[in-house]
Image 1 (cartoon, helix red, strand yellow):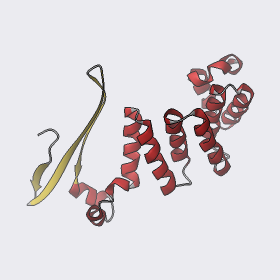
Image 2 (cartoon, helix red, strand yellow):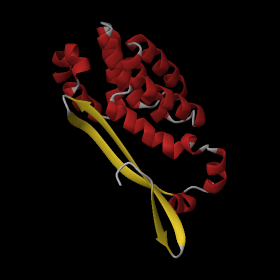
Image 3 (cartoon, one colour):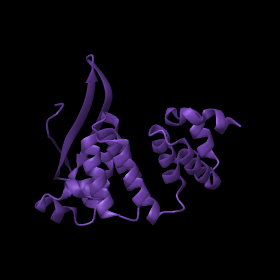
Amino acid sequence: MAGRTQDKYRNNQCIRLRPLRLKREEAGEPIVSISCSFSYSCLTRIVPNYSALRKRNDCRNLPHVLTVRLAVYAGLQKWELMQMVARRLTRHDPASVQWKTSLAYATRRAESVEAAKSILIEALKLHPQEPIIYYNLACYECQLGNLIDAKTYLIEATKSDARFKLMALDGPDLKPLWGEIAD
């Protein structure tokens, strides 16, 4: 019964399972295939007040659900949808650097490098110690041709975490700086 709701019974209680299958097809071959089932009884234990949320149909906006949707849209390369979900997560948890960087990542692909850069500049004001913001700003500046600024941001990222130097040597966005980074 692929794609249809199935009812299973345990202890005389109906548990409704809904399979979710998403595919991104290219030349007839699935690139991304995600399959999972949602169980009402499991969600009532995991998510507090799930029954009340279910009645209001607010389940789609739970942070845990949005996080999964963000990953799915990234895998499917649905940048506009990823951008929309990242904005919701950012509004839900403005202190999280993860949602800001995800929003910038999606915005770069959906709109432009300049728009993504402005998101990270704002995030830098809230999180001046986060090396991932500096690293991504280095990538964006490099793509915009601002190699001096890119190098400055990359130096700041590698001060906090040396792994960013290895990432920079592997990242195609920073290819114009590879000669200087390797030294």
